[in-house]
Image (cartoon, rainbow, N blue to C red):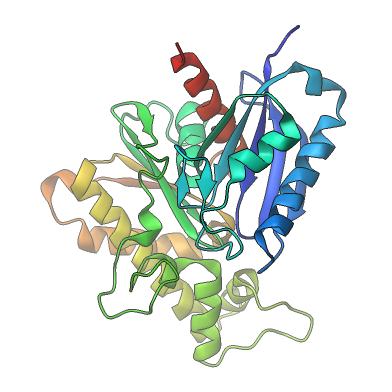
Length: 313
């Protein structure tokens, strides 16, 4: 039987996406549901199972040889558990065990969503040909991953490069991770909204209270909305500069829903990077938007899965 496809899951605080991914990284049979907000762990798992069940109804499911999962973190690839900061119902939750009850005996690989994203961009996106790269997923949370010496780095537990939880503001807000002043407390979508609301911004009568609504207001010249995105971009730039000093990256690829704001986010990010990347070997880091887009997590989860299978004895 041909098993040329990998089932992939991309799990975040806003959505749970799934697809079948072929060896070229092409996405087939895409499925997606909202992540249940503030729901118990088993409810969130049921949403994951729903996506997998829909994929299994596709006629190509018989060609699936493994499952790759890219999840908001932190994750623990060794124990198969997850505890995403932005999914409150999952704390040391046995995700791999729960998923195996749906997919049976398929091999399952778990990595952080940022690791998956940068693996995809390195294989077929904005970081192709780069030996050292940082990927950042700026959405409900802020995740990240690294490519070092030409290879995606997952680390012992699948969390390497989780840059959203480095401190960029010593006296900043407390983060749900337990830290203070993390990048995520400034640059995530909910953090941008909180900042704008606290300074007087209000969504229009037909708008939801989202980062996308703040971005639209900024596009109309709302100074409070512009400041919220400027602050987020500056925090991201400081984080990229820190990564460049630590591991000499050549490029930072930025994806996720918040990155769809374009230059509203990227302009202050690049300006901040120029300010903070003062060492000779940190100059010249390129900042690029994701080339693969919203499918990067799925493509990367599948790529991580294939890489692990190749390493098995």
